[in-house]
Amino acid sequence: MYQLVRLGNCIHVFDGQNAMFIKSTLANIRKALDPKGLPATRKEILRGAQWILCKDPNCKVQNCRKDGHWIAKSAI
Image (tube, rainbow, N blue to C red; front, side):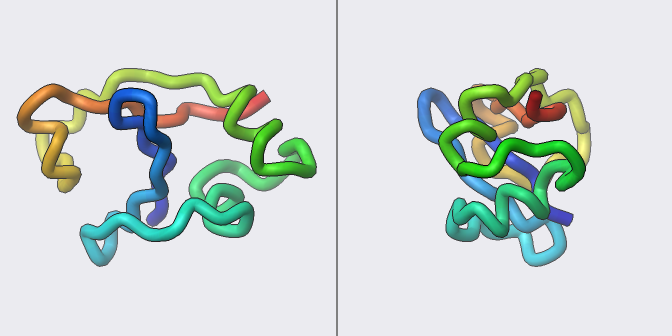
């Protein structure tokens, strides 16, 4: 399962199954979010993303234990 993650001002795609960050290409961003109704470009998707603070106690993102991070809930 892919997640769109924001660490500070940087946006990454996290592969939860392999517990590693992968390239944030348009295809991977679409996999991380619901592909229905997303804008056509990567920039538009990232600009319209709605972010929520991660509250998962079993989160595998290493930075989550330190400062926390934001997860994209959806994109408009």
